[in-house]
Each structure stands twice: as C-alpha cells, then as structure tokens.
Length: 177
Image (cartoon, rainbow, N blue to C red):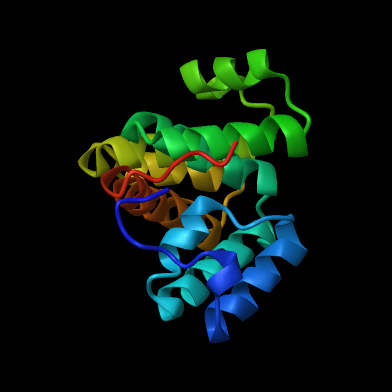
C-alpha cells in the first residue's frame, strides 16, 4: 500500500481510530491516502479538516474542487490522485468518462459555470508555472465574478494538491479502485 508503515483500520487506536470512523461515515471507506497520513495523527486530522472545508466550500462547487485535483494531478503524473478524482467525477458526480478525458485535454470543456471555469484554468496555469501568472490573470477572474477569497482558496487547493501528489508518488500509494 505504501513504502511507509501505515495504520490498518483494524489496528487503529485513539485519534486515528476516531478519524477512520469519521471517514467511513462521511465517504464510505478509508482511502489509502488517508492511511498514509495515519503515520502522523495530527497531520491526518489537519488533512481531513482541510478537505472538509473544500468539500463544503461556501461558494465554490465540489465539482470544481475535484476537477482542480484531477488536472493538477494529471500534470504531476500522480496516478493515485488521477484515479480517485476520475472515480469521483464519474461515479459520484455522474460525468461520462469521455467528458472527463476531454477536460484533461482541454479545461475549457469543463462543464462549469464561466466563473468556475476561469478559476480552474487559472489554477492549472499557476500550478504549472507560478511565474507565468500576473495581474491580468487576476483581473480576468475578478471580471468573471470571483472574489479574492475564492481565487486564494482555489489556488491554495491546487498548490496543496501538488504537495499531496509529491507525497503519494514518493511513497508509492496504491490506487483505491
């Protein structure tokens, strides 16, 4: 499952056991990525709080957040994250596989409202080369109706995804599906 020793659900105790129960209740299973975080219970808790915020973002859709993770992970060649986010788009959000593949090739094909599509494209651009973005990119986002907090939250989500991709690739996390 990983190059590091993680906590199996049957052996979980304390905070890890409580969080595993939370994951099972919220999403139905314990993803291998969460098992990696079990090595450090504080980080596991922080990771869940972080994801919970983005899953329940006050103004940005869950579909946008999954697409951000998918496209950033595609650029980072993180098979684990590509697999799980493709699964979420297909099985949980009802998108056809052909549509998902089209989005990976061209974010303009994402079935999002214009404001969220602009955010998706910005996050992909910034995570590929943060020096390639400038004030004109922010102006486009403002013109499309994005607030500064939405811009920050979307890019923060993409940047954290890069960090997760590095961890999951380096520790060889196996796919859940």
